[in-house]
Every structure is written in C-alpha cells, then in structure tokens.
Image (tube, rainbow, N blue to C red; front, side, top):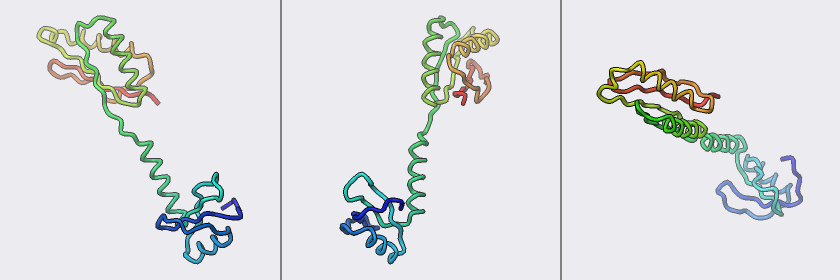
Length: 159
C-alpha cells in the first residue's frame, strides 16, 4: 500500500468491521493471517482497508469489469419489401444505422411475393440500393442468401 495513514478502519475477510487500528497494527494483523491490506476507500477518515488476498481480489475485480463490458448483442431484423418507396427505404436505413451504432448485428430481409419472385435480379439491385442508403460504415457478416421468396443479408458495424 502506497498510502501510510495514521489510522485505518479494518474490515475482516468475512466483511465485518474489526475496528479502527493504527496502520502498523493493521499491517501486523494482516501478516499474522497471511493476508494483504486492500484499500477500499481512501476518501473517508479514517481510510478503509480490507483483509484479503490481493491477487484474488484483483482477479475478481477484472472479472466483474469484463462481465459488465460483455453486454450481449442481439441480431435485429429489418424487413423491406420489393415495392417500397424511397422514403420508406431511407427511414429503415436510418433505423438500421441506429441498431449498428448500438453494436447490434442487423439482418435485412426482403420478402418477395407471387410475381416478384420472378424478378430476383431486380430484387438484388433494390437490396443493394438499400445498403447504400445506410449512412455509417458496415461490413457484411453473412453474404446474400437466396431462399424461395426471400433474400437475406446480415451486416455489422465496421470497427
């Protein structure tokens, strides 16, 4: 511990308060129990320290920080139609950009009905036109897949 205060409030391994000790006494108690003094709060008077294994405490802290960072990202779906107007494409492209900004993957599905299934090449052009309307840079995570009556492509934000 870099700080050398006169008094410290000591918390035991079980989380219960042991009392207020001089810093030297707290160090002796920690050494007698083969533990370390871990700084809990330096802003309070007296400074609060806890008895424990420092390496284990550090490991638990890193583990907790990692789990907070690892927020599960889901795949959002946007459905577009073959005969949609340009304004609808722009609105849905803006929504896709918002999903990408949040870190989600976006699956774009173009549903083809009845006679639209005959014009699969035109449907691909419309899908590419939609992708060009998305304002932020993205990468294609799964290429264009063609199913009967359906075109599917998945994109994610470029890092």
